[in-house]
Image (cartoon, rainbow, N blue to C red):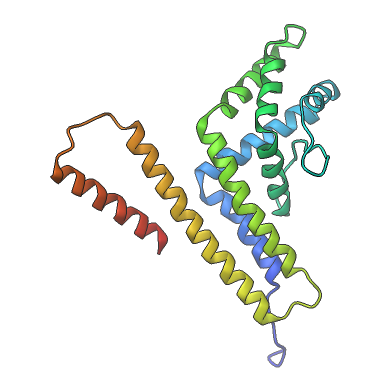
Length: 212
């Protein structure tokens, strides 16, 4: 009916944005594919799951955060999965390494877990886990606020604007961190005043271009 007012659900729209954003970034795809692979490996075997549980530590609430699976429709599952991996990152890596070196395990399982241990040992994996956990916890907080029964449209818009500002600031922080890593990993070259000016200008333009 042309007389009916239609207002999109803020919480549902935010969930769709979160789910679809993974497919737009290769780094995010790699990170969440690895998280899914780790969960699938441990959950497929009660023996592997028991080894995992023995190597985990409890959080501040005295609860053990085990690895979590992902969902293609619920973005909150990604938030729980990144949080669980971040809190027990070292323990998960140690458990994978332990299974990879266990001669009593099947060769196929050892090959699979050796690949997982190699991927989780990368600096990029730790960086992406921390970055996505920070972003997704904010997403989750905003999503929960949008699910309250007494939410009004003005508050919903303010929450989303606040989340957008947070995402932009996080993007700038990530770009600056990557620029610093590039500077540290780049081969040494003679740094003249001209080269220094050009380098700083190029990196400044990169940061501002991604912040718009």
